[in-house]
Length: 151
Image 1 (cartoon, rainbow, N blue to C red):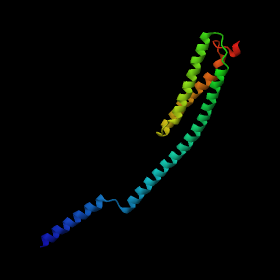
Image 2 (image 1 turned 90 degrees about the horizontal axis):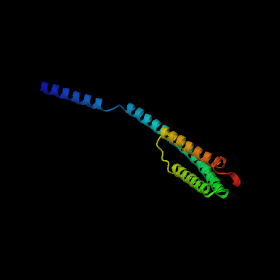
Image 3 (image 1 turned 135 degrees about the vertical axis):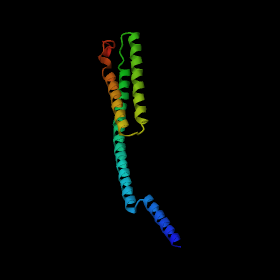
Image 4 (image 1 turned 120 degrees about the vertical axis):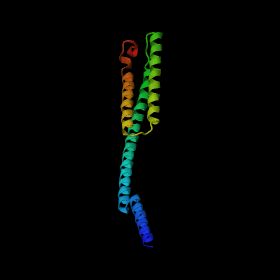
C-alpha cells in the first residue's frame, strides 16, 4: 500500500510538473499579447502614413501628368516644320511622349503597396521617368532638327 501511495504521489508530482512547464503563466501571456498589440499598432500607423503619403504623391503626379497632356497638345498645335522628313520625326516624338505619359499614369494608378523599401524605389524610378518626360517636352523646340515657329 505504501508503495502504491508513493507511486501515485510520484506520478502526480510528475504530471503536475509537466503541466506547469508546458503552460506560460498568465502574466507572460498578457505581456506577449501586449507586445503583439504594440507591434500591430506600429504597423497600422506605418500603413496609414504610407497611405497618406501615396495619396498625396499620386495627386501631385496626376496633376503633373495632366499638365504634360496639355503641353503635348500645345506641341501638336505649334507644329511648324520645313520638310516632310522633319514632320514625320516630329510626329514620332510626339507619339513617344504621349506613350510615356500614359505609361506613367498607368504606373501610378496601378502601384500596389509592398513596404517602405519598395515604395521608395518606386518613387525614385517614377520621378526619374517624370523628369525625363518633362525635359523631352520642355526641350522639344530647342533642337536643331525642329525649328521653332517655322524659322
